[in-house]
Amino acid sequence: MARAHQYAAGRHEERRRRLAHEAARLMAEGGIRDYQQAKRKAASRMGIHDEAALPRNEEIDQALREYQRLFRGPAQANAVRARREAATGAMEFLARFQPRLAGPVLEGTADEDAPVLLHLHVDDPDAVARFLDEHAIPAEPRTRRVRLDRARELDAIVWMFDADGLGFELLVLPEAVLRQAPLSPLNERPMQRASLAQLRALLQHDPGAG
Image 1: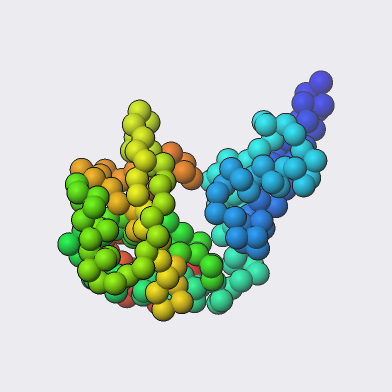
Image 2 (image 1 turned 135 degrees about the vertical axis):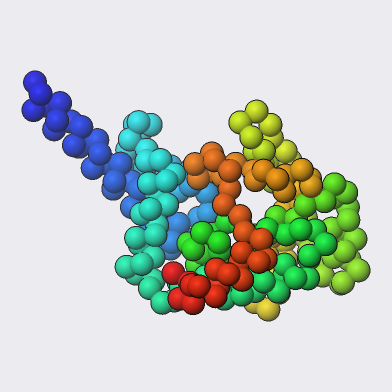
């Protein structure tokens, strides 16, 4: 009985591992950004319909890092560094909105198609629209659901545009959110974010960007 239980548990873990790696491959090669979408597409492709077999987002993130290290190497590291350097200029430009870098560019998993995600903090959301208009930046607004904590959500405006061949996303948040980052879709803990000073230090101490 114990051996049968061990065998079943081993098969379950193996399915989770295979699903995590397939979801990571879809994210790396198919441009999928959403963990839920990636894992469900991977499960469909592999003919797995057991919800309990779906890997956690953190498992997929780890598999994605492994995939990028094995198959992308310097190209992926260069993509991260180029976007971090571009983020420093953007954060200087947007300094009045107390910007913070977040997402794959900060976490080191950005690829050649990943945009630079900046959190801007201002209680008047129209201030960002006016600023972009004043500087003739043709940005397109979208709405994005943000989890402030386990009890509160916010439909925030995100401004999207391209500059120098790179995509940028400016997520507009209330000033109070500067003190406590929104929850990450990866693990439902406060998002990792970096100020301009922190980003400069990261670039200085991590020239390889990997």
